[in-house]
Each structure stands twice: as C-alpha cells, then as structure tokens.
Image 1: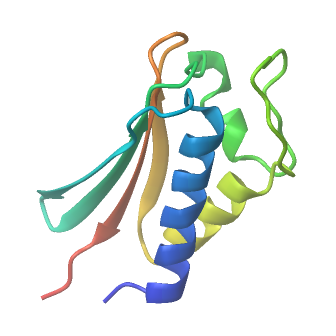
Image 2: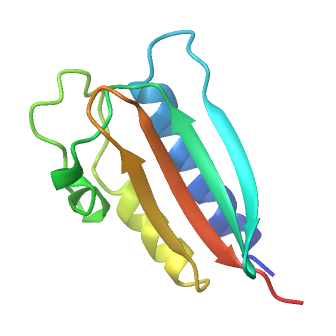
Image 3: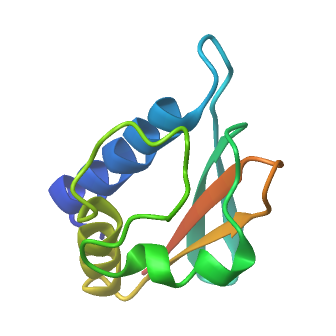
Length: 113
C-alpha cells in the first residue's frame, strides 16, 4: 500500500547519504523487519556517526551538522523531505547513531491487509 515513488525516493536518499559519509569501499547494509503491523527498512553505514544531540535536528530543513569534517555537500533538505514523505504515508523515520559508530537510518510504514 506504500507510495512507490515516494518510498523509493526516501530509500535512494538514505543510500546516497550512507555512501557520502562512509569510508570508500565500505559496506552499506539494508535490512527489513516485520514488526506489529508495520515494516521497518534500515540503512546502516560505518561512517563517523551522529551525536545524540543532533538526532532530531538533522530532520529539519537546511540543517547541516556543525563540525563535520567529512561533510561532502548537500542542501540539508533530503532528510526533511524523507520525513515528510514517510509521515504522509502514516510512517515514521529516525536515526540510531553514536559518534564513531556509524549510523542506522530507519523508516517504518504501516502494513495494511
């Protein structure tokens, strides 16, 4: 029941970010899980990670994480647009990350039977 175009856009955006912030040649992992009438899609990278104080900020328009030496461009809109696309479908999007431990971006979408 998902909007294929919006959901694909979100997945491509998360993958693009993972490639942008991961060490060259590193592995990026995509997994899915079924969880109580929703599906979770997870994109994990081994980049520099994101401090917990910035987790909610990165989903705001035009926000760039300060002091990121590995910053490689972008407008600061991708995660904000991703959040709008996922929420418009009744889902959620969030990040699980710590500095030095990579990041896992997760989004959920409801499963309708």
